[in-house]
Image 1: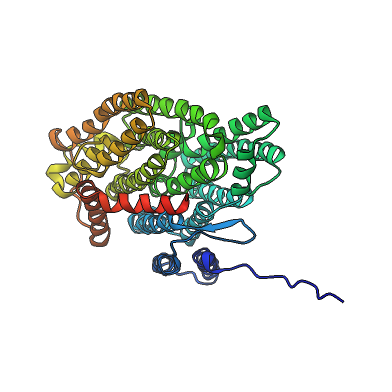
Image 2: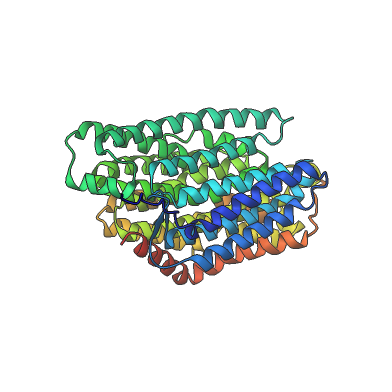
Length: 485
């Protein structure tokens, strides 16, 4: 008699950070139901993020590790993006706390939803299979829908949450339909296996192209790029500023990883088919984002359209189809997250005493009231405009170099032209900070020590990584090299 084969347990080590985040999120949720005092949720969330970062660093190895029957991959790209996601989430928690307390929104639910959203991002970053990609995406999306609706007595927040939910569901439908068509053509849901099948060639080419179209359309919704950008300004404006801060930062890291896993790990043999679609979306995003931002008087809407243009730049790096373009894209998304954290962090920081610092006019004469806050905002605006010596300049330069290296000189020229247009609305904010008179009875902002210290570190990172970009760029290049070898 033959012995039956024993079922082997998967290697849990690569997924230890995800397991820890899940346990802690459930624990915080349970404690929130037992204890009425909510002050412990904040330090426990920070503890969770710091320990998860330590676990990620300790368990990281240069090799690509695949576990859970090919559904989960741990590689250097995943480790770098996860550590950045921990920092982003920690910064969101620190920046948001005074804002939430003042508005009666400092609830356990905020921290639980943020941790579950982070868990969804981590699953997306490490997904090696269509199923795990979709599970991570939905976990992130459902958490963000609830966060946008956190201020339940606000009609504006509720409307934004409904728009986000409906359009998010539409995007998920596009992605699922595209995935099902690709599965029908290739017979597999595992991304590396799909790449092998496509490399060998498939018979039903029209169905494959249709699947790619739906998949790229779904990606466009999730990235918030034109012509699928309509939700971005409404959600950024309608959500509480603390939630907008979160949506604008860490999820972009997961969206970048999601795009790399799908288009590079799984569909690279079809690069000629998806390259053109990404080029069209990138140019439209640069045009719509930069031109629409000029007309905005609300800084959250202005930064929302700015996000659309930045995501267009990110797509240019990926659509180049080269290793240099992917590494530049990774550098760009990290730089953008740092700039977005600082910009929206300052909006949240200045929203005090029942006032929402949402309009550009609210920043008038900030230099006379608090020179350090004005200087930080100016640094962030210069960096987003792509001016040296800030990190935004080097991030855009690396993307342009990868485009020229891949032979897309005309796209590099278009990107430069729209960047020049985009500089206008960033410099307008600097002009308001330094050259306009403050509003009558404008508040003089006293420092909140912990928050201002982290904001200062955040902004100094934007400056230092512009002066010395090589260590981070080398790290991104190494991570991509080990991941895509």
